[in-house]
Length: 393
Image (cartoon, rainbow, N blue to C red; front, side, top):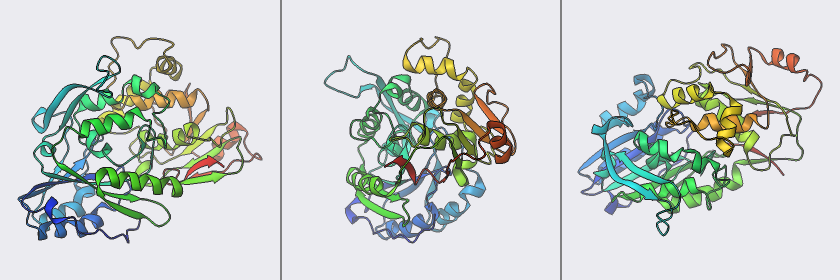
């Protein structure tokens, strides 16, 4: 994404004589983070805060490499700012703010209880700036807002609880939906335990990327209103199959690339005919994925789509010995997709951990088309579905 967007200097009272944390997304988000920080850090320094830390919100993704961090590291060195990567499994870097919060405080005996465990730097901050990308998200409706805090900078047990089957079963835990979404409610409740002022700097990646900034809640509200009008791509008909091409940061592993298939197959006003196959083409240079969340998903996928779907919808109980750590939820979303549509992966190096009974793999598009006898039938090529979500008009 090219960045011609300009950040306005933040209000002075949020910065002067304050401990400040700037949260940034990791390499899985196509945000021009370095260019935004190049504008923002000198503005912060002008107000001479007590301290500034830049915190990489990893969630359960792998840590960013030195090469990936290089432009950000240089900026932090230039402006004498501490750069930290979140560590969701290390108790020394986490603070427990609550053990069991409920999404509805008026009914503490109902619904799922969540622990609130967040990065310790956030609990010591007076002001937190959240740099984020606002795009459709499978569970939160849209990314952005408090998600970068409550998942990106949360402890593993908080992330695990957020991705439990109870929240995933709720029909409002879905793309585009934010107002009745219990997942989004949970994110906001967790972030509310921080004493810091929360400020948003959000980019909506439309044809002309647009920046919103201000109080985090107001910034997110304005961002999603704009995103709903610019990131949905209407189609006038349904199709017997689709070819989705995923590249860039979303195409480096199957865990990320498979999001595109679930967005198209499970999104609102689907453009797919019943049973239509999805051809997903991605390089997947990291295989299934290297982070702990990705590896947990790969393990759960091995149990089989039919087994997972029955557990998701409540036909069978989750076995007591199965521990659903954060990342496992993607396996259940894949199972839901596979209950509706075949998924075919096209990648140069087939991924051994994908069960062949659930997902076919081919090295080329032509091989897949030939095997599925799709030549001559009409199916669109979809690119960048994260920023141009196809919907039936």
